[in-house]
Length: 570
Image (cartoon, rainbow, N blue to C red):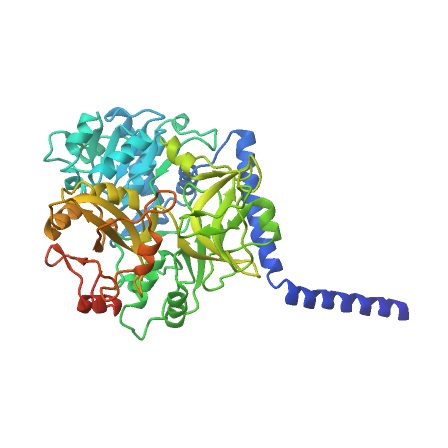
């Protein structure tokens, strides 16, 4: 008996000691393990899909839910409720119209230009039911950018929402010349070459089309084309446009428990006037990315301890992080288990030369814990990189070879990150040819090409500058004028308004006499980014976008201060 008690005491002491040791040295062990098991579970499911050649798509999942809970609200929009059955039947009608009237066939690619509305889902599901891949178009893009999207995905049909038909006025002729048929969600159209869909729905059957049309046997089968930046049966609350003033009222009205965000959204909410009911809601979680530490803390302090699940990833990338712990200011957490599955590294980056640092043997150099480096993800069996649709050049441009050894291949995320001693990963900045503003990715090359068409501009360099209190970077363009010509703010304003989406229009212009280059003959952006847009420290003429005067006007110290203090709306 004594020996048994001694053995039991030793066991209890051992378990207790192990528990204390785990808490002190590995405080997140169990939460990391649970997260890892979830990742593995999804990975196993994907492998089973490969082996059985049977893939469960978003459409399949929706159809299952429509049969299981037909009367449950699927989408609540503008006060109206659309059940799973409603969306299922309307998407069936659209699928039949697509087959019989639009003459779409399995394998066709269709571009979709619609705002947030229930019919967006109905059209998407209807196209998926007839076996078409769908290219989601950004409703902000214009002219050349729109044509570019068609060239990438190869779509020969465009479906446009009733409220966006007028957006095609400047590009409809080009689309028709490229033999692209255009259909709109209207009963009648003022454009003779724009076909209508709504007038054909009433006569269409709401019975499902043959399942063979949308059966998918390979994970590599194209389903969606997303030009960037599933459902479990949770009801979705859809708004046509985000409204900071109505957000919490909508959450209370519809008993919202989870919302999706980008960093700017949370800042907008924090900037709203405080009320006595700021913490009166049922929201328990937010999922998204781009949330700054200061905004994160203010959001928690004001609206309650809502778990913010910050994530990092890209549509085309082969790596993702998730902050499953909820530590403020981090986009994810790595550990021994995670690195077994996903091979990534942070390497030294030369901001002046705008390229990774390589040693005398031509290999990249990893950074130390806590240091900022360029995030690279190894391309392999577990983390393949499929590339961009329609562009082998862009696909190859995102790959880095011979990174650490001869023959290895890594995906270049273009993001500067840092990983601390605890394995928490923080986003620092973007490098290269893109930056984020207003929650959108701005492609500097696209803006440069557009501005380069203005007659008085000889050369242009586009980059992003930080503005206190704002997420991301605001667009700025350094410009060299053609000999004998002068800067015309009104002409540049009209050009930017016509050919660039709102988020891509440069807020600031800097006139230069000489464009600085790097040692590898690339445009120098680092020094321009560092100098910012302060007229008191920059001798070059500066201009700012002014929507009231419909021009780029001189950037004065007074205007600069109004921007810094947040008085001037951007």
